[in-house]
Amino acid sequence: MKPIWIVDDDRSIRWVLEKALGRENIPCRSFGGGQEVLAELEHDSPQVLVSDIRMPGLNGIELLRSVKRKHPALPVIIMTAFSDLESAVSAFQGGAFEYLPKPFDVDRAVELIRRAVDESLRDEASDEAPAETPEILGQAPAMQEVFRAIGRLAHSNVTVLLTGESGSGKEVVARALHNHSARSKAPFIALNTAAIPHDLLESELFGHERGAFTGAQALRHGRFEQAEGGTLFLDEIGDMPAELQTRLLRVLSDGLYYRVGGQQPIRSDVRVIAATHQNLEERVRQGTFREDLYHRLNVIRLRLPPLRERREDIPLLARHFLAKSARELGVEPKRLSAEALQFISQLNFPGNVRQLENLCHWLTVLAPAQVVKVEDLPLEVRQEPAAREAALAPRAEQIPASARAQAAADWATLLATEVERRLKSQQTEVMEALAREFESTVIRTALRLTHGRRIEAATKLGVGRNTITRKIQDLGLED
Image (cartoon, rainbow, N blue to C red):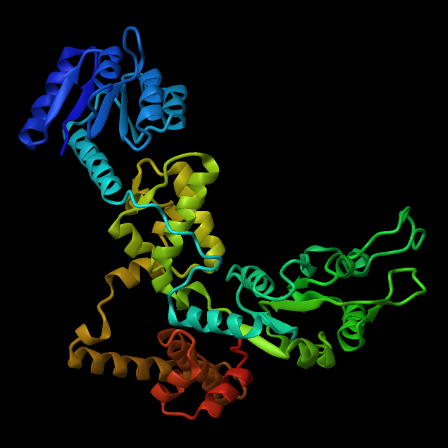
C-alpha cells in the first residue's frame, strides 16, 4: 500500500494524524502546502490524500481539482475548521471522497481514512474495462423465464399482454420485444393510457382531422400512425375508458381505424403490446373491461416478477443504477458495503425496480462517502420493518423443532381467536372468507419461494399444475 499524504499548513494537525496513523501501521507523508503536493505528484502518488481547505497559496479546493484532473480515482478527504455550506458543496462538487470538519475525533478520522484506502484498493483491483450493459438485467430464474419468452416472441407479430406490478419493468420488456423483432428499424411508440385525460385519449391514439373539434386547427397524426410498421406499447390498458376499448378492439380485429372527425378508414400495420398492473379478469367480471378486448389482448401473456421475487438480482441492479447515476451526474460511482447490500436485499420494494433506481440516485447525490454503509441509507429505508425483521430472523432450519411446534400451536390459537371474533361480530360466510385468505397466503408464499415457477410451487404444495393455475385465477393472484 502506498502512503497516505496529509496536507495542512498547521503543523499540529499533521503531527496528530501522523501519530494516529502510525499507531495503526498506516504509512503516511506530510506536506505543508498544496504546491508541494503538486510537485510531488509529477513522479509519485498517494493511496489517499487528506487536505486542509484553507491554506496559503493553493487552497484545498484548488488542490482537489488539480489532483482529480490527473488522478480521477484518487480518494481525497477535505478537512476544514470552517464548516460552512459553501465549503461542503465545493468539496463534493470537486469530487471529494468525504468532508471532515475540524475539530475532529481522531478515531473517526482514522476510520474515514481506512474507508478511503479500502475504496482505493478496490479500484486498483477492478480496473478491467466494463462489459457492455445488457438491455435487461436479471440472473434470477424468474427473469430467465422472461428472457426465454422474449426470445420466442420477438420474431412474431402476435399481440402480447404484459402483467406485473408498477415499476417492474414492463416498458423495458416491451422495448426488448420490439428491438429484437423484424420491426426494430421502425418506430417504438409508448403511451400510458392512464396519464392522458379521457377526453383527449381518442385523439392521442387515432389522431384527428382539422376542425374535428374546437381547437383542432390542424391535422394530427395519432400514436397508431406514428408507430406504423413498428410497435405500439399501451401501458395501463386497464384504465382505458369503455368507448375507446371498442375502437381499439376494431383495430385489433380488422386493422382499420378512423381519425377523430375522419371519413376515410386507415389501415394499420402495428404490433400492439399492452401492459397492466391490474387484474383484468376481475375488471371483466365487474363489467369495466370488455371481455372480447381482453381475449384479443391476452393472446400471449407474460408476467413480470416483482423485485421481491428476484432478490438475487438486487446487487446486480444496484451496481448498474449507481453507475448510471454517476455517469449522469459526472461523478465517481458509489459502492454499497456488504452490510448495506445485504440490508437492501431484504427490502420489500413495493415500487420494484423503479424504486431501487430512485434509491441509487439518492445515494449517488447524498451518501456521504464512496462506500455506502447501512447508516448512510435514507431513514425511511432503514426503518422499514420487513428489512429489520428479515435481517434478524433466523432461517427455518435454524429454529429448533420444539420452537417450530410451539409456533404451529400459536398459529392454531390465533386462527381460533380470529374465527371467534368473526362469528361474534355476526359476519357471514366466515368459512369461505378464511379459506380464500388461507389459500392466497399459501400460494403466494410458495410462488415467492419458487420465484414464480408454478409447476415447482404446485409440486411443493402437493397439488396438480391445473389446480394451482385455477386457484391463482380464482383468487386473483395473477399480478
